[in-house]
Image (cartoon, rainbow, N blue to C red):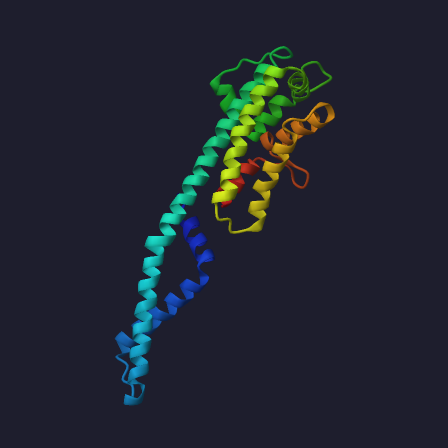
Length: 235
């Protein structure tokens, strides 16, 4: 867990609480060190302010340790689980891609190769190779998936598992920004919509997979970072 990031997130989510605590601490320090002597008319006001400052500090401590920390721990468990499921999803799908391409190019399916292709840059380079000088590997395996029911079924099973995890995140996670929510919602919608696609729509579906695995977007083009993992880390 990145402590600096968590502190920044806490400050962002609890600005009002931090302001109130700062005022309370300032008053208590001022009262203690300067030993404020107020006229009898203001003694009741001083007592009220002192009690209010103590109440604010007590409530803040209660909120942080009883409410915020347990809830944030729960959210981190959800995020870490999705990150692990996402990596498993990529590894399983890459294994299927390699298996589907063995009729077209020399694809030695081993753990080391699969792990290396999890990297968007390596994935893009590997599946962009034109072994026959005409079509790249990604086009060849997409054709195989389009016509082979075994690969379609296996890929669909992996996508269903992945979609359930995204759905769980959308329901259970407290997003700070609408942009983050829309990103995961859009990934869910596209995969759900096109996973049963046929013919031309299936090519669009493989285009969506390419965006995920090769970290490509219409706006920014290719990236060295995995967009999905980056979004998880930003939550």
